Length: 262
Image 1: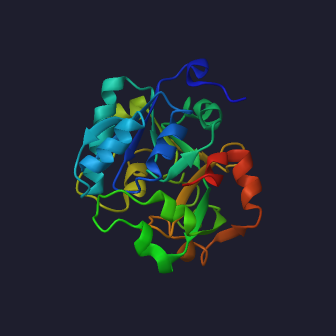
Image 2: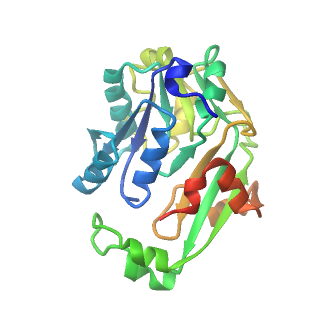
């Protein structure tokens, strides 16, 4: 059984920028509370604020664009909770229950730690019936019964890491940022005006990072055919991306909640 945060002796806050994906948010927040002490959701509309607050997250208000400012506003607000570390994750990113147990020892000698690789779970729905479950208004509720009725299957892929000049860099999902690094950058690790390239911009602010392959601790992104996704399964599967056959076996071991969405 994985050790709790209190047993590990560190105060960890997860900062999550949110825009839509409301059926997934409660699952993401609940999972994070199995790993961290506090979850902060950075929101710009009442729909997202309501869903995140109901799931137990603290709310920070910020616009969605530029994304650099949105992330920074959440990171700076996290300072109030006196964290030893911030866990950097998106609203569709999950980390395994034992993640900190593996990562915290590495953080003793590095400002940023994470994994080289990640898994991507893609959930397919019958897109011909998309109008029956996708809200017509941008921030309206999804019809969960219609979503379930149009489920097709799950796919899983494994991205093994950068093969370019960024080889060896930890991926964005699950980066653990140490308090002294955050203090050094004023708790704003990005340039406010950035809307893309954020992961790389953070790494350029430190020469003290380490990443490991995720055999011991896992990170997983979730995409669906219901909404647009940062990680596009069809695009990534044409690159250095391995399709995994035993989807259920992987989920049962690491992320059993993935079998029950939505």
